Length: 128
Image (tube, rainbow, N blue to C red; front, side, top):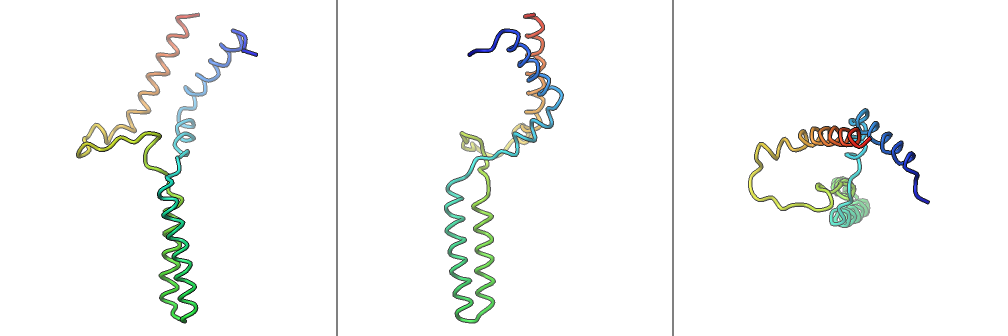
């Protein structure tokens, strides 16, 4: 069952208010979500298993140094497996050295969202 026009307007107003008033919260929540990097996940699991094998070998041959190396390998494998992907859904290949504009892209993204929200508010005010 679709929403009535009044309910849709109220929902849109609440959403605009959330994005306008709590933009920092929204960006923090969205930034925390990362996609899994399945290649790194598989490599990390393999490295952790290999590290576990090295730890067991170190215990069997009574060499603590080998066990420590195995533990370091396990730790590195877990860190690698839990690392989120660097990009979003589609990653663009880099076409050369980074410019000053691409280095400031995250800062400009927040300003872009503010401008888009302002334009949306103006459009909604004009339609009413």
